Length: 275
Image (cartoon, rainbow, N blue to C red; front, side, top):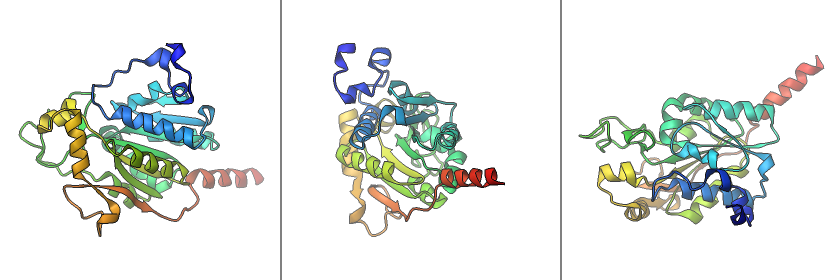
């Protein structure tokens, strides 16, 4: 397959080693991965200047396909690993990608404190409302009353709002898009990568194999139509945090930058050396 690697986009992937991929037909993770890589190329982020970190889960398999510095860490531990990388190599662009289960469940505490510390990281949360890799159990973002492998009669727990938590915990930049709105998604990732400090992009993605099947939403095409009809632009709503039963997409929070943790840490090290 080496002859396929004839453009910069394909050069960003481990074509010989990792393809064909293991993602289910119709999965939105491939769309997210491809869009992210196109942003890297548009921004001129070189492969040897980039590290992408993930935990465990379908979305976390992305690091195995990318041909740059990558870490495939333990379940929920992508952010601590990314913290260490950024502190050791503050010159590198560090991106974390993972699913709603990995980042918001076992990794939830790390997510909150990474935002609080304002680590100079970009976090892409692929939210398909389910644990896709392990059989379709309900996750922290599965809406109340919706079904899953572990909730055949409906989930009775309240769900997390990923963007609301990110904003409340101190993130500098918070945005949401979907795998239907690819051009929009590309813009959101681009803005996040250009922000100095902790930035988050939530990507609402289809999982026809589990979430879609349990809710009776149909195949991938029908789920993409569902994403389209359920989404509303942030500029068309008065308060994006109070909208129910719709995906408010766009930049939801963009505050004035403050020095990120990595910068403050380096300044502390420099002061210590002077003593």
